[in-house]
Image: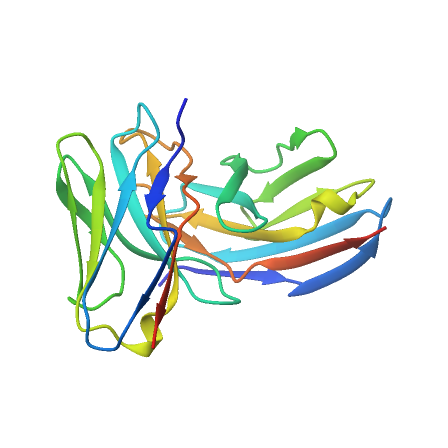
Length: 113
Length: 111
């Protein structure tokens, strides 16, 4: 049973560039959430997708956008990269109902130079 | 705004010691509190607590929630080097599964 998978594992970008990160949820899960974890801090909620729509959004600028596909996989896009966007980006999946715990992927380490 | 504070920030113990990690929170419309262990990358789920006073237990790990005082503790008995990790506490407030995380407690267990 495949867990949450993310790609790529590492990425180096230059300020001003754009980046796309990808996530496949755990089998049986239909909800995908994205979190940003800066070094030495806890993860911060970016947004959540359910039924191909953004259901909730955290305190992140519009440079952060996402998409969910009919097979429940998801993408996170970040435009006009800033040095401060350097972080571990974690994808988490869950079922859309009730209080089910999130299952996390191994993340994508993004470095902006 | 929901808020989670964990203490201590870091902890160094020796194998066999017992540790207690703390998590206090402020959240609108509390739904649940969760504990995760993060070793290298992916946080792995440990416990979800929704009711006050009921201890959740898994092997040497246990956790309890106090909804009146707005805190939770995670206990690890007979610690092993494999327990070395960052332990994250998170709360779910508004509808949906959005979690607000604390900054984590970094635990190092020395042989």
